[in-house]
Length: 317
Length: 253
Image (cartoon, rainbow over all chains, first blue to last red; front, side, top):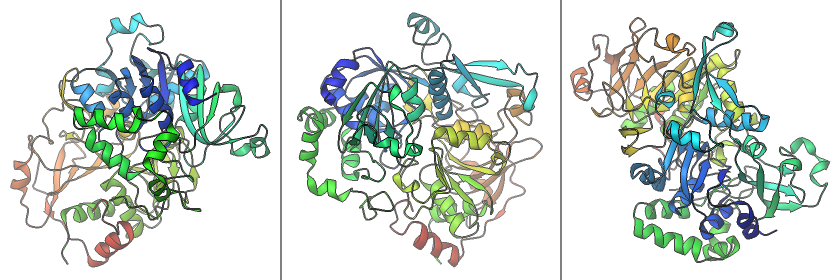
């Protein structure tokens, strides 16, 4: 299956979508660009600390609702710019959680239970202030009827804990992750940090995997200790070299500071941003075409050095 | 030796870190403070990221907490679940020191990193909590970086993202949070701590050339200043190590 076919078949207008990666690393950007290219609309997006992927989806007018802990890409965009603007102009509805809460929510989804407890956020506005109304929450059975629930510890204060916050499970319709290596059945091997990709992948009804290297069946089974997601969760696997570009993929390539900076500049102005989307997304039929446009020289400048896993001499000023 | 304000703030934060501390850091100056501590005064401290990297070597400075540079030469590369569980772990969690920043702070060290204005119709939207609320909820001690401005030192926050002492000495306990809370607030004019009885912010030190009155002028609320002393300027060794070992290309400094 091509990426175009996978997105066309599984990412439908209005669907609940979760994407992997963290800020400027291992975002499934080829898939994000394909979603924008296919003009998917009204998506309900779940992420923990996403950056580039979520911001481009919002900028591409694909998102109506967002449940998230953090929108930024570190030094390049301390707050994601299209995200900031959409929230300020109230063109998307946002529900704020913390990173741990989002991770626990995916884990609860993966475990098939309705909620998990934590002590994080007690006494804060994350509990008090809601982005989605109760009325709205009642309309869609995929969304829980409450944002968070504070409950007494049923074990009578055991472990010196009087109260807990119950965080509701997430089971997305579709999760898309980008990994270093997958096999044709969908077994996955990530290198470096896994973020919450494992929990997101296992919580989802449909899992689309894009990968740098696609290997034969059984190849990853020679060293199973290095694999994190077994094929039983997978729906579609697509080989997409540089599939996280312009974000980084440990041991393969770094983030591209040229793209990241150009994006942050363009995102500040509606007209310039539309031009940017045209040049970087709509003008290209596939991710490979975008990479051709970016050019070999720039891709070579971000190739990871052996040993450290990133581009040591990359100019990041 | 000449130094910049950013260098002074970084060194002040680094001095708060001890050998054996597990230092949770975010993006930017907090990362640099952790690197400075490791290279200057606390070589046995452990750098730790919410993304799941433990004991990153940081041969090159990262520009985000998911930068591939934090994944090199670690003790373990895990994920978010590992990281947040570490902060609550009954044995090692007590050793975690959080370094945080925010858009607004109040007298009890509560932080806002979500919105300015009305939550439903914000004037300004920020990145949101990320792991900051989790860190502030769990760890026994945190260090906060803030720029001194009236609109940042607020009587009342527009949104309480990360808990400090909430509304006073029993605030955390009443809310159900574990003990802990902010320890120091490092600003561009001086350093604040928190009174152990009232849990309200107090001025501990002014940077050279700054008076307590000038600091109060940059805050919406009043704090005690009678214990304030002048802060030691960075030594040549501190500055050399910071510039040459931590951020040689000036990506953050």
